[in-house]
Length: 271
Ligand code: G1P
Image 1 (cartoon, protein in one colour):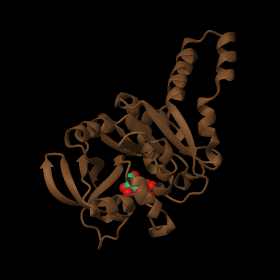
Image 2 (tube, helix red, strand yellow; image 1 turned 30 degrees about the vertical axis):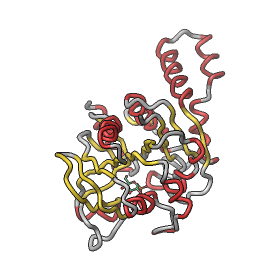
Image 3 (tube, protein in one colour; image 1 turned 90 degrees about the vertical axis):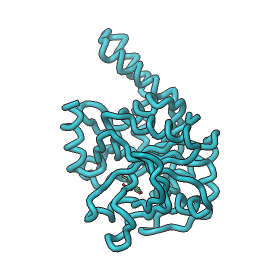
Image 4 (cartoon, rainbow, N blue to C red; image 1 turned 60 degrees about the vertical axis):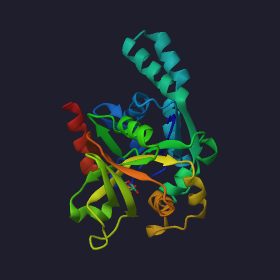
């Protein structure tokens, strides 16, 4: 069973400047609700019991968001507003399931994952990248079902325009398992159009094996000097670990860019 999820949140959010110059991008409202709450709701609905947030000192604001008890209690004591009471109850529910670890230097997603090593209990865990919202269908829940059936790692996949392959992790597929699932032969982080083995991109949902930590410890920095989770996944595939690419059926919203962020509010308001 997958009971733990990790969420890397130490990123600087430069693609969303100036909104992120003094504010954490994951707290920016998307149709009136912070982006991170959509991610937490997806986890809860998928049966996740514990979520590990990887933050940095610069993003302590994210922790503060869940630790405003005194403030809420004072307000609620003064006026019995049911909306505020319900919001506070929700915050308390989230707070109970969140643990915080720190990544104070932006050394990449692989490095962020490594910070959670001592907290991961089971053989597999879920990772969600907060820039990637998937609505209409719970992608984590579908991936956990596939994991339970095939007992392997699973990653979300989506077809992208060939011209944009250098923006994503790109899969080299092996065999078709069924309509929406393929076994993976390889995965390469942000390749050039020439080097891209397909137009199938990695979207930010991963069910990873605990063994990935020992590969990450040895992992050399990849392009832009960062430690990429993609490279550690490739090491495991080379050792014959099975990874499945799941073509999810929900709607993908890219909240990490200004254009995508604005569009995501519009799309969610239509749901
Ligand atoms: C990360 C991953 C990349 C993946 C992408 C999905 O890139 O490294 O493999 O395709 O998320 O959004 P980033 O968005 O951090 O540049």
